[in-house]
Length: 198
Image (cartoon, rainbow, N blue to C red; front, top):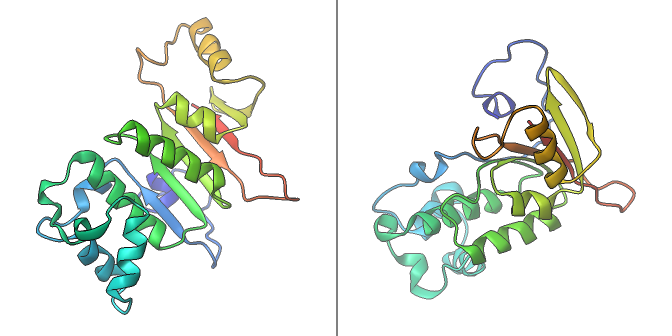
C-alpha cells in the first residue's frame, strides 16, 4: 500500500502516476495524524482555507458531525469518531482512487454499513485491505488472488477463498490473512468491483 502511495520505493518495476490522479489514502495510522485541540471545522479549514464555515458544517453533517459537534475539539472523540473524521477529510478532497488499509477499525456497525454503501457507489478505483469480510463482500464482485508470486482471477466468493486457504494449510483468521480489493473505474455503465485476496 505504501508503495502505491509513494511512501516506499519500488523493489522492481515502475510507478507511473496519471496527472489527473487524486489519491485518497486511509492508513491504520491516519487517525493518529489528527490534531489534538482542533475541531472538525479546523481540520477542514487546514485543507480548504477559502471555504465558508457553513459549507464545512453542511459537509460534516453528512458525516454525523451535525450542529455544535463540528465545533467540538476532537480530544474527547472516540476512536470511531476519529476514524469517521479522517474518512471525511479524505472524501472532502474528492479522490478518484481510494487506498484503504483497514478502514473499518474503530467504526461502529452503523458507520461500517454507511462506509460499505459509500464504497459501493464510489465511481473511482479502490484498493482495499481489510479483515472485514462483510465489507469486502459488499464492495467487491470479482475476486483476484495473489499467491506464490502470481495474480489471477479467483472463481469463487470469500467462503470459497477461505476454503482454498484451509486446503493450503492456512487459516485467514489464525494467520491474520488480509484481503485486498482493487476496483476499476466504471466502464460501459457496468460497475465491476475486482477484488484481490492475498
